[in-house]
Length: 206
Picture 1 (cartoon, rainbow, N blue to C red):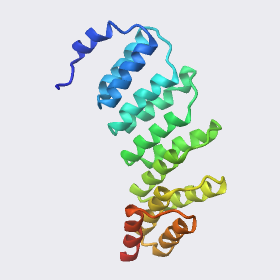
Picture 2: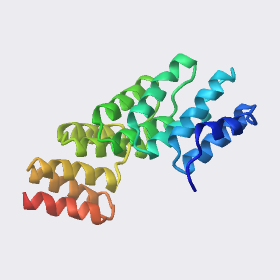
Picture 3: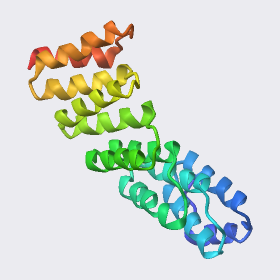
Picture 4: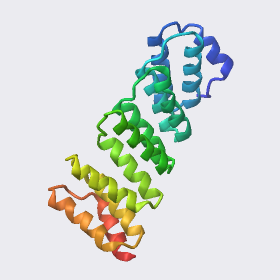
């Protein structure tokens, strides 16, 4: 189906009167990949004078995350405190994933720091997104540092985390540390997947 135009959206928007209705509409946009409509609806919600909550903001951030619009995701996240809304793990994970897809490791790392400042404990989704962003940006030292921090706080890294670190090290021709990271996968009783095996092989080839 062809995407709806702004006039069509405005016609439909007249029927939206509550935060719950706007949240449902933005969630539909998120699932169907219509991030621009999601952002437009969020703006309309504000103009109607309705009070935002983390749920509706999370839905919009997830819509931009799926569309790899990391700039939009970060901008929306940065607005939350000024609107009296607290960051939570879900919304930060969506923002980190958006940065990872856009290859923006600084934004992903900033989100991780913001979570620490808000006394939020990052989950595997958040950490893996930051590690993957560091991998794509060839920031192997940052990836290694985060992996060490995960061990320190007893947050068990998974196969995805080790694969990202091993790939970062392999790209930097640091094959010994890369293989050590992969050895830790089996030492922890984890089963290496295809990505992990490719990371190990890539490290040996360089």
